[in-house]
Length: 147
Image (cartoon, rainbow, N blue to C red; front, top):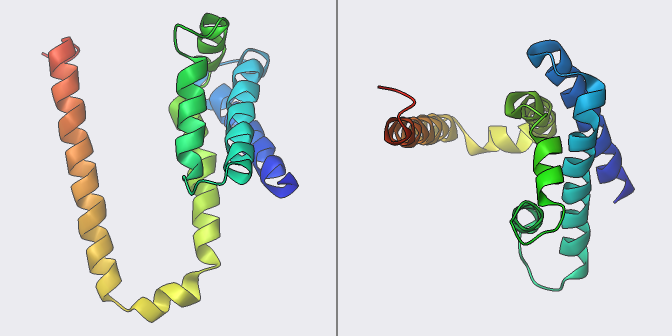
């Protein structure tokens, strides 16, 4: 758990720097939001270890995040205001880089799958991208952001 906590802290620092450089948000303004995001993630991992049900950690993290940003939580507005300072892309970039590095250690296993997995992966990624784009386009048009 300590290793994961240190990883989350490192990703948080990188995201704060990226948020500062890319989006002009002061690290001091972004720090509370990043601390909240890291705490929710660490809490989700802790719950996943404690609860005997086989539920993926992403579900636990999502449920906690939904709860603390819902209207029934007393400090909801404070949490929303703090985490709004973190741009999604500044947060996604170090996470994706970490995922890429993690993938590198499994490269030998990936090679065993052969060239067909590359074709399947390309179709899956393309389909996911196109569907996400379609959903975003519909959402933007319904909200009037694109005319």
